[in-house]
Length: 137
Image (cartoon, rainbow, N blue to C red):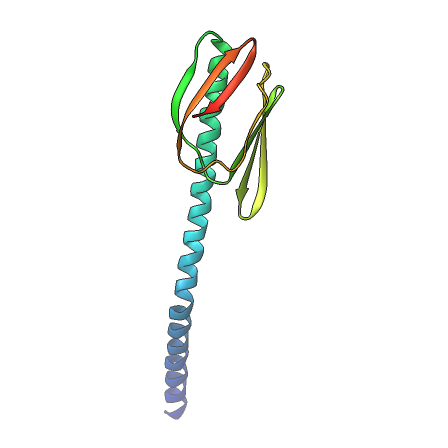
């Protein structure tokens, strides 16, 4: 009988300690999940932006007489460099600088966008004398 009572007390104490441990660690687990979801949202925002700009550039390459104007959400921590026939994005994910480079058949008017505030801009892409001009107005 004593042996059964000891097992019951040890099991109860173990469950009590486990409950306290889980209640202490729970806020940290929630913050980890929130951190991962913000990273996922940032990556999705960057990819949406890259796809929008890429499709706009291809549209202007196919139709050099037309001007592409569209409102676009500029993500935070993004730098853009336009040089010759490539477009380079530098962006920050998990405190690391990542780069993505797109190459095109027509050259760009050389320009750099550094530390633009994260807000909405009008994306203006046009073709001048066989050079692609990209502006965020």
